[in-house]
Length: 274
Image (cartoon, rainbow, N blue to C red; front, side):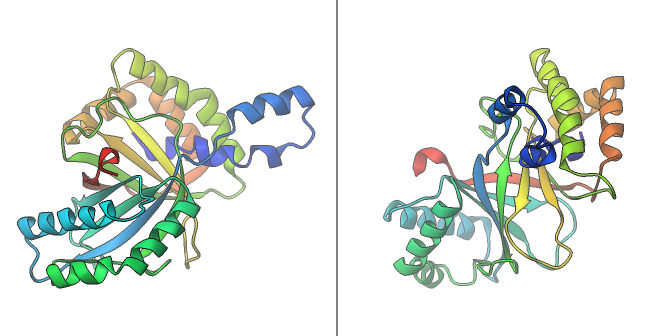
């Protein structure tokens, strides 16, 4: 299913500014449903070095986790996305860091850099992997929102499937238009599908960029499925129904997105290891 349908959280940010003329009761109801970020994510472009192998990478990650275990750590969890398509000139993989919020991210980076952990890791594991640390160049932060929780047991088996897109509003359209369709149509349809077993693994997140960059998209969104087979089956069910196609048409009127980029997702650091 297209991530264009997943902009509920981002659109909700702007609700209070869209209509200052509503009465007190309406404001109270809206305040109860207006979303807040569930996390702060950073996406780091990473390059594999000459000594990269699956074994050397696993050893690097193990020592990286050991370094984090030995310091005051603000990181909730971390993941690596391995693109399924052709090689990208900018990166081989993407490391994804999840923090509770931006303040935790800033504290975490400060603690990590002061610890000297990166120098130790590069000394122990030369030419294995190097990840970006320059904001808006090879390190990109997002306030992440979600209108659905991850299904129980998600990512117990790896890899899981990640789909990402970069999106912009069509001319004359904005978050309030997306909010209307998401709130009234998309989320109810997905919840109905979850209840009848049609979408057992699907969930999504949408990100508001926290950096400046030329030609930056208005927002990103991410689709998650248990695996490629689940994606094909659940997407097929969604677009095999008149309701799914009708909702997609509504979103096509208000936003335009790039093609989906698919990756295999793996945990680098699970919450319980923090």
